[in-house]
Length: 221
Image (cartoon, rainbow, N blue to C red; front, side, top):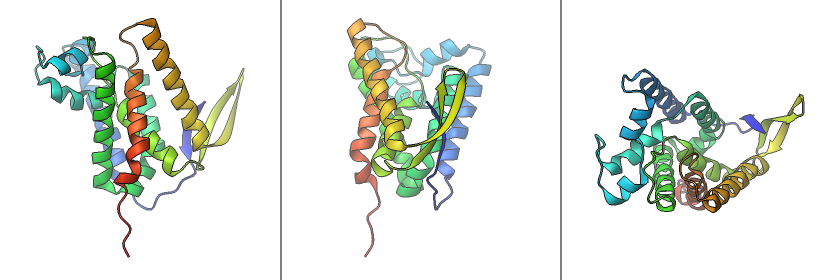
């Protein structure tokens, strides 16, 4: 299933959602055009669990700061496109409910928690984690709690045929969350290192789901 839009109108212009997308695209272009090459850039500014926990590193910035820099970096076009698509579909409604400033703080908060979820489950890893996936996962967690019945236009592949179906957000995001959990558990069972940071996705999703109501502005009157 590939979602591409929802039927959930907003009252305000999602300037921060668009700004985050633009910033991620800009930084990705900087990665691609860097004379160092994308791999060296990832090792220089990506979040490396072992370095973050020990605070010992030869990276050009402090290991704690890589939690933030990694949040805006991506490893390829499809990695970037997937994260930005989900942020575009679901982020505008969360920004609308929280307000612009609360939204950006909530987004970064989810990104930080997701990064540490990965760090704590891969404490000895020296492979950099990059990507907005953890922060975006927090947005998905918030969305499924606030708008579970919102209809999401989704491409469903049936063999050689593609069908567009309007599916409740609870099903679309719930299916995504189950996939993350299964893959996360399988990755730990296989004892592998590297690849997708599944527990960053899981951590981001859970913190968004659990805390979103605490972030909502108080109603007046």
